[in-house]
Length: 330
Ligand code: NDP
Image (cartoon, rainbow, N blue to C red; front, side, top):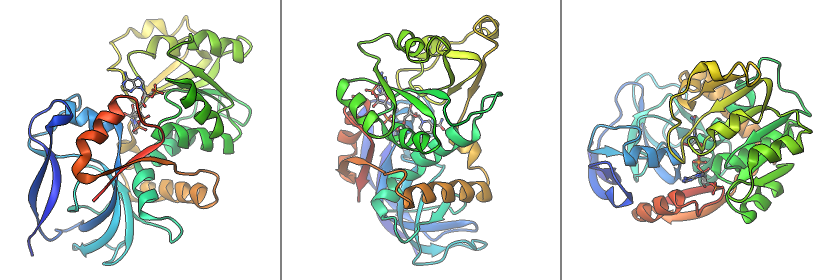
């Protein structure tokens, strides 16, 4: 049965004004799909890349890759969900900024009883990202309690989750952030040291903090502005994990530069490879549910916007005015 739903869509790439509130049809789920009615929707920086066209989409297109709600209808072949289940997801294709949608069931996970919809919507994409960064991206010499790591944008959505999780793993996380208040917030959430990279030279500070040794891993989602400095923060055989471009994409570089810096390793990661199988998605989500359930990782939602106010939400995220997670409420 076809019904209508409100959906924020983009008809052309551009600024926040391109986010339009449309009314679209939503039908019954096909094989491998479900229909979910959202109770909360997660906002992520990747939504900005989709909106600006940095990551191109066919237009018009829905936007948003994270949400939580109740399963309304289940398509053929879906066995891990039933009508009435509370569920949350990080998933392709974009289209979570809406009241209800039909989508592939593969990346949807049942929400444990103790986790509410807002938390579920805020934490899936960001929490699964922190999970794979800390647990599935290992430097060649291993990563153990006591090791130093550098995490950029430490007071953001992914950042505050990573600070707490790294601390639970015994890692000595050095976090960067764009203001002294954001630095204080990162420290409150488990960063052992912080650097305001708008006022301090972070490479120099990392050298001082680590007694000249450098860190084993740099997690860099800022991209253009931090790339060069980040490579110089690594100790020999260290790992540079590039996973975003909040300041713009990284310029092409020659692999020849990596040898003299200490035979360092560079990788570019995306969550969607890690969650490309149902089994792996569930295993990673169970790990996330466990640290959230135990209280080791608290999901901090600092901004809430109505779905219809998605433009304001984007301006705030892009303008570096947010901390922690941001959600939209249908
Ligand atoms: P955040 O809440 O961390 O927001 C982005 C932050 O980046 C800002 O708050 C700001 O923090 C910092 N930043 C630095 N330079 C700029 C700039 N020029 N413009 C805007 N922001 C800037 O977002 P998310 O938690 O949603 O995502 C964090 C990053 O991780 C993003 O780059 C995102 O694309 C990436 N990501 C990648 C994934 C992957 O698998 N590859 C999955 C999930 C996220 P400050 O003011 O402190 O500098």
